[in-house]
Length: 186
Image 1 (cartoon, rainbow, N blue to C red):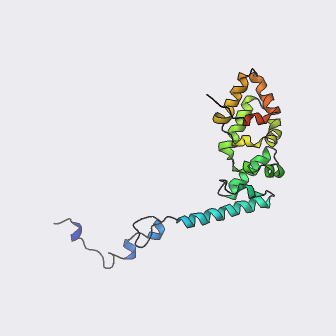
Image 2 (tube, rainbow, N blue to C red):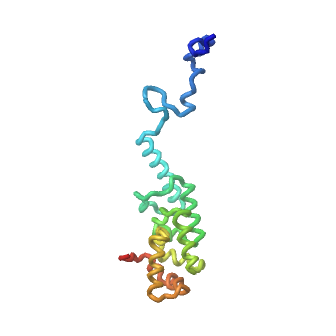
Image 3 (tube, one colour):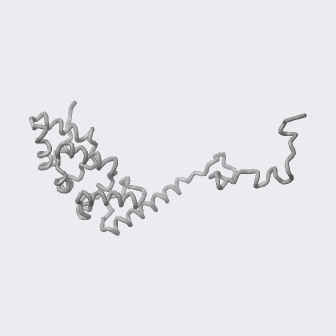
C-alpha cells in the first residue's frame, strides 16, 4: 500500500480546473506573469488617488468658505471627514472661518497629535479656557508646537527670569507670541 501523492486519483477535470485554484482576484493576487503574489497600486495610481482625495478635501473647505490655496504642498488629511473633524474642533475652540483663513496652515495640525496636547499643556500651566480663543487668534502657530521641544523650554526660560510659576499663565495670556521664541544654547 502506497501513500504517495502520485498514487492518488482525482475526479476527472479537478486538476487544473478553476475550482482547484484559489480565486486570484478574491485573494488580491495578480494574474499573469508577475513574480509578485499581491497586487499593489502603481505609483501613478497612488498619485491619482491622492490628487482625487485632495480635490475632495479642497471642495469641502471651499464649501464652508475656507480658501485652501495656502495648503498646497502641506500634508493634509486624506479624507474630508478628517478635515471636518479639525474644522469642527477649531470651531469648538471659538475660531471662525475668518480666523482659519487668516492662518489656514492650522488645518495641517492633527487634533489628537498636535492640538489636544498643546491645549492640555497650556491648561496645566494655568492658561484659562476662556482665553483660548483670543490666544489662538493671536498666535495660532502654537498648535504646531511640540510641548517637549518647543513650549516647555520657553516656560522653563521664563521661570528662570524670576517669573513665578503661578504668573506664567498670565504672561502667556497677555503675550502668547513668546511661545514662538527659539532658545539657543544648552
